[in-house]
Image (tube, rainbow, N blue to C red; front, side, top):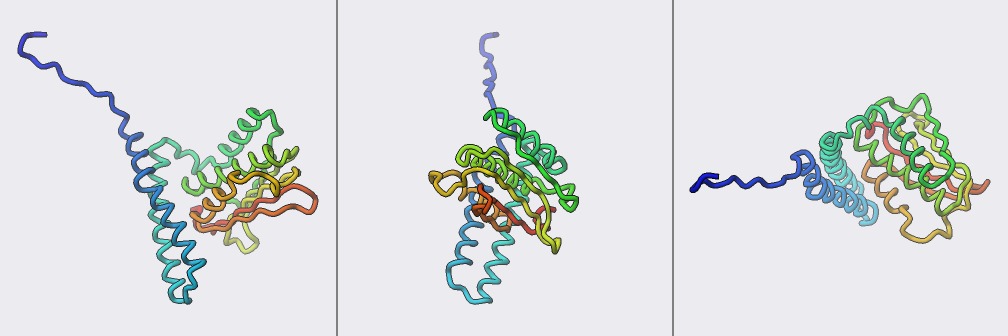
Length: 216
């Protein structure tokens, strides 16, 4: 290098999409998730009158809409856009891969003809995580030999319904922190409901219901 010249300093930088995705997740998406959950809890337990409850419901929906748009951006920035069109295939591949890691039976996936062919990336991501957690609980804590996942819609056509049933020992005696709260929160942020009950024939039934419009 010639005397008097300054060699440029080259800094190692994270690719822009990856950096932006992380910033969106940490600084925007996570606070929005917390806000949706707080509004939902306030609406359920604050003893609001009908007018106040309706106002809070509209506020919750508005925040949820911003959250969905933010998460859709994250899906694209992370190169995961295929989950919108190929949710069933991705879910099947995940179930097979996870079963192989645990040397466990592959869960059986049943998809109703009424299940939408395309769902938004935010809904797909959360439903995928709910199914994964429910299956993991069934195999790890319930010692299930058979797990079934059913994707369908309600009889009135207004809700998407995801059901996970197993023949294990149930989760009644399982330790805390097995993901039940996480599954419930994912249902809430999609504007849906979550339930888990013991089956009369043995095992556990997990159900998530989400308004069908939230999947579009």
